[in-house]
Length: 327
Ligand code: ASP
Image 1 (spheres, rainbow, N blue to C red):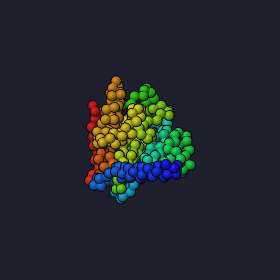
Image 2 (image 1 turned 90 degrees about the vertical axis):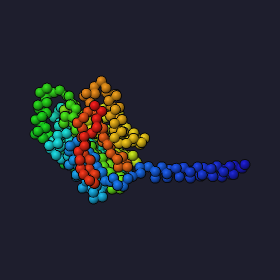
Image 3 (image 1 turned 60 degrees about the vertical axis):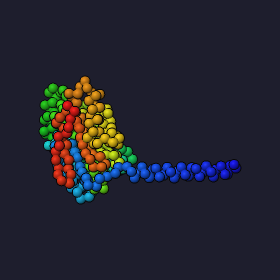
């Protein structure tokens, strides 16, 4: 066979292979993430303050808005509330008396943005969104995050309220760092939502563990730990002792378990069981909770110790649900 004929034959095989490959790719694109339109929209968020955050998010979702806008606006409400002492303005400080905030956000197209150890800015979630939309990066920390926020027009404020300062001064008397399960010396607002187009997004924001070491960063601003969204599979966020969530790459793990066919509840439970197995010697001190939505509009949650609750807003109602627990 001449070289030219060999070339033509090989090219033909190559083209057939490519065509078959394209069909497979097409199928892959169109088979993934089948949605159930009856269940949209839907929003879930962690703890009691999830109820009011859900209502804020619902204003956007019920008007046909995007999930990414809903989760940002929903958690902003909690960030701005000085009486919520584990998130944003009024959050408890670190052991040096500094309020340092962690937040991240993720949309349906795998766009991500995050800030960690950010001081003086009331809405870290919106700075995280600006990182996502206005920089070539995905995460800014500390002074760099503050510098960026100020450049983008965010206002510099004192976030340490009188109440939080008083509590910190009281803590200094013994200066013992001992996070307690389900006591509000932590508690993050994590929110995941599905919009009327069936798209998923999530947001997570916190002041972290009260009286942590200065510079400590928890799971909440870490994509894959405190939050993960894959529009084909589901959206997951976490609360509890961040070190333990990071150790198992928690939210990414839950998404991958759902990808293998588990329901949101089963996937959350399996991830929580992993924490329990790895931390069995100190399980009394450790709380971790996950909440999840699947791309089909199913939802669920699981935690280690009883006492973790989450809010679910559907077309019918906004309700607070006690999460099932391992113990
Ligand atoms: N996960 C947060 C952190 O470790 C705290 C919490 O959600 O309770 O900073």
